[in-house]
Image (cartoon, rainbow, N blue to C red; front, top):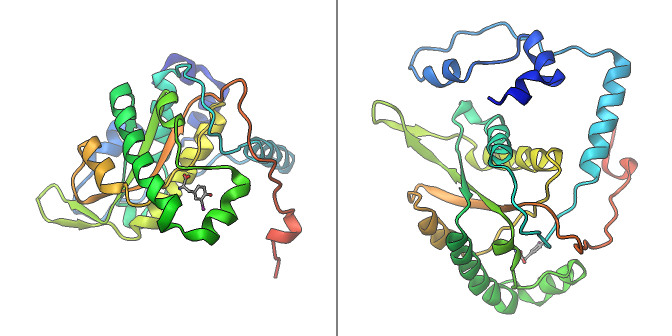
Length: 253
Ligand code: IYR
């Protein structure tokens, strides 16, 4: 881990609370034995701290927007590594961790990915989605054209798998792999926002198998979503969307 992380107050807080888990210890235990339980106490804040932190977090996340106008400016690789680490912290069915996060850095691969997606999206917009869907989407302003897939410095492709192999070669079933991997995507989006970067959830119909081949992933892994990651271009725009107020999304019973 970097010195800057080790020296930060946040890191110190977490370590003080005994919540830091050594990577090697976490990686080592793949035994069949029932896992030993260990004490766990997350940091306890005062009520005022909780209010302030939850408000600040809401402000951060409420500023997130899906961005499709990316700058070609590079992003430090360590930031991407840390975002992926966050994706790996999500809960998963029986702790089976059904995700693989492919980080696409190569300009050539990004070009191939753009070509595959644009070819499918031409058919999607013209035929597969249907008139009503295309009409319902028109206020967002999307089309089959996806130049941002080449302009962004990184694309994260999230793969989900229904199963893998145990160390002894037996089949390991990934329970709830779809929802687990989707929660992982939520964690990634939060991490991207926290880093001051932008993304857009991209789910191109029919492009999965070709994208999997470009990434050299096995057939057991299916593309769930693509996340281009980078800075917005200085002339980036987003649709003027508004979010439902609390009273429209929360019901207390
Ligand atoms: N996946 C296509 C179309 C699309 C569909 C929905 I629903 C959106 O909210 C946005 C886009 C595309 O990326 O253009």
